[in-house]
Image 1 (cartoon, rainbow, N blue to C red):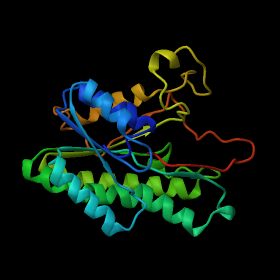
Image 2 (image 1 turned 120 degrees about the horizontal axis):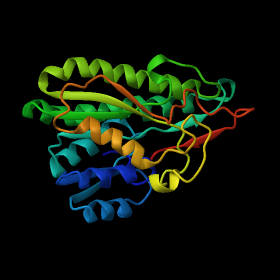
Image 3 (image 1 turned 180 degrees about the horizontal axis):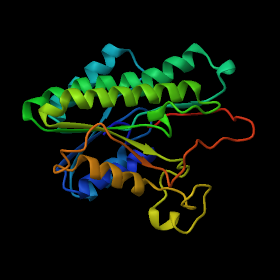
Image 4 (image 1 turned 90 degrees about the horizontal axis):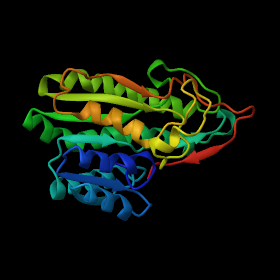
Length: 252
């Protein structure tokens, strides 16, 4: 699982271990992975962490991914949670922002898939899940998210096309869309005690997103591919402040 030293993925990775995955390998960029590794091991699986900066030079990323597959693979499941976000109006955006959005969200997914697909094809079994954004499957526009939304829409197009190409190899490719989840470590029990500005009227939690991932990667789920599953509490639009506030985040 990529980007799992922090954010939503840090809670999802141990959930996969509890589902019976014997070995869960995570990638990290800057945040120390020790807490996630400990949680995976406490859930009963072997754990490994590899440092991969998905904004690095492509050759360096491919080398890191190849080493991870060599030392900890082969992998039959890829949950790719890496996805930087820049909320900024286009007239204030730079080419560096553009590169970060597309390299971090799209190129990273392409390279991760290239590294893990050969073993899946050989085994005639595989599960891949990418993370989209609200409205990305419909190219829905939001102020301040022009580059981010464009990258996530490209990611959905890649995932759906890959799903068609790999279906005959027993490999499913799907997309999970988390809602506006501000507190990434928040457990569902606590989330149910709070209020939020979505139709469900409570904030989402990492457990809600984990449920969607677990559903899609189950071994028996071989007939669902090319799907986009929204975990948003019914939210249909990005949270849009009166004046777009610039923010920048990168999944660990």
